[in-house]
Image (cartoon, rainbow, N blue to C red; front, side):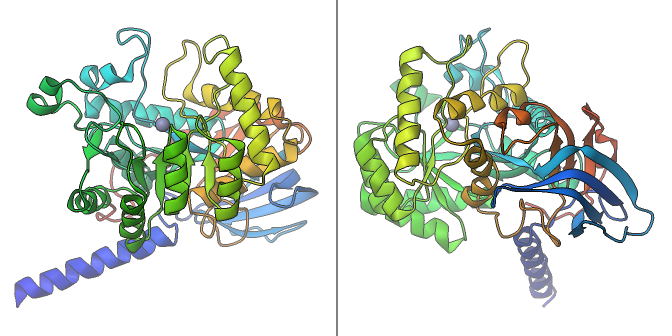
Length: 445
Ligand SMILES: [Zn+2]
């Protein structure tokens, strides 16, 4: 009987956690805090409208009112942003915060990163990368694997617990793929040293697919990532439909890494949620994606002194133009998982604006893609992101108007996350975020 009661208690606690997660709760450390923000301009990226002289009241981590004049919550601190534009936070829909490959020692080959860097070390680096992203205005990151043994879940939980500030994480756990994952291991590596593990879960059969999806969910995944065609034996349409259903049973979407046209065709037919990377996407495939409402998470690398090539970039930009012309749902995404000396992760990510500007997509639309579309592709649109009463107070401020000049996003002077000020006057101020204990209960997973 006692055992049964304990089980019931445990189940109830878990249900509560699930409900909290669904409401987008997990507002670390913000209980008892209140602010009034004076916005010179308040930008709504969804409608493309800027409204002058607005006030935003924030209490206990959430927005309580937005208007030309609001009643300040008791003991509210005023933040004067009357010389700035205030807007919702930005989204990178494809990154890997616990992966940073570099010239030395691994010659930019991420194969070697996980040999040199332990999961524990990578988790700490992920925390640092998260801070660097947040400082550049990215309040949401969809993190799609290659994080060792669940460093991504660890980071998400630490942020939700209030141990460190960071972006809201939508993480995939370990990437699921057919034998070999995305690697081409030698037999010695794969069989004797298990070197594919922990970067990939190999799932060839239906039983293995169910087990892989459930294992990821058990260890904290919020989205499922599969490698559609990383090997000469791409997943079959029916296999992907099976995974999509298994994930949907747990309320999760499936993101697919795609690198061939055949893989893309199959993924589209299977009704995958998003196609990651744009290398294989043609005009014809874009038309199919638009028809089926499949997201294009293109990870469009700019041509810079440290990344890409002129030819590659021309292809990338042509692909973006085709996707936009065909009405494909597009997301800002980077796959920026490498170290560029002298740059933070945030700087590397925001420099992807170069690709978007080259695509000729209007600035107003780019801003919508980086915010509204971002919340939709990471599947939080109904609980976090847009600035409206009841929602978590995540917002940023920039000089100028990004609806007219998207480069305004390059200098974020103010960041509020979960109703706490993270950056003010261009300087990070994380103190209020930091806590020694779980501020949201013991049972966040
Ligand atoms: Zn990636």
